[in-house]
Image 1 (tube, helix red, strand yellow):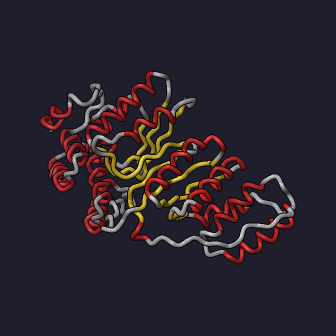
Image 2 (cartoon, one colour; image 1 turned 60 degrees about the vertical axis):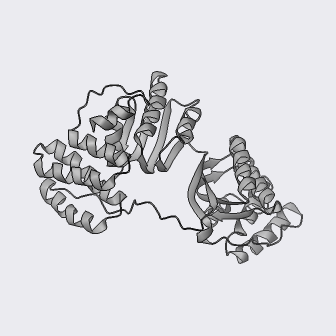
Image 3 (spheres, one colour; image 1 turned 180 degrees about the vertical axis):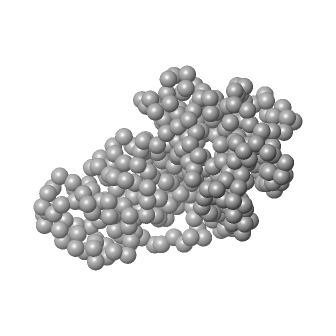
Length: 343
């Protein structure tokens, strides 16, 4: 473990922590960060055979059970859960398959995830979204995490979708039905104030199988605005095998999301936290879908969070898995941010 730390010492700025972790927990965290899953598991299992202190055992157990969830070992997880419950007289974590999906050989379309409340302040993000689609010739937009849309936001999304379709970019809208339900609660027949939302709803419905609902809404639109509504022209469907597991988050709401694995020199997604933090005293970062970071990326995150901490901002890392939390403690992130474990 010390050798790994020494190799990375010149790449990151790390402060000494005041909270001590057991050496096996530190070693397992660093092994996992380096992608050595089996070795990390072996270290944790051996440590549980020799560790006596209850607090240390609870930490080791949490890491081991999370590691089994992260690597998809359900049978081993369920077998050990019984031992955990017996030892601590409490319910173990529930099984969740947190393992990474296997990427198909033919995958080639990038996903852009939209989240939060869509409004006019997202113009810059939509310019980026359109560039991705034009560059790749295809795009998948995940709308399932949008909680609301105002007129300006509806105009941005509508312009992007129509523009991409007109440019013959292959386009898929995941979560279209869910967003349609959100928009359905906004439009009111006879009221002309929400025209961009009406048009967006009509557009989004074409990415669902709700043609009957589309036709009903089209009639209401014609009566409300006294003009012809758009026609039903559903786009060609993209197959699952065409969609890549690579994704880009377009942050719209009040929480920044980190997902998948952050490894290697590409830490742009981390550096964007600084821009996201602008104007905020509390910076919430959702890590519930973040599986792994390597050592250097964790160091980059520490440096970014340290700067925000020095500016008086509270950074909250939410839903962190136990293996990542241990690495964050090794990096002293717990001294400059609040780390909340996932269930």
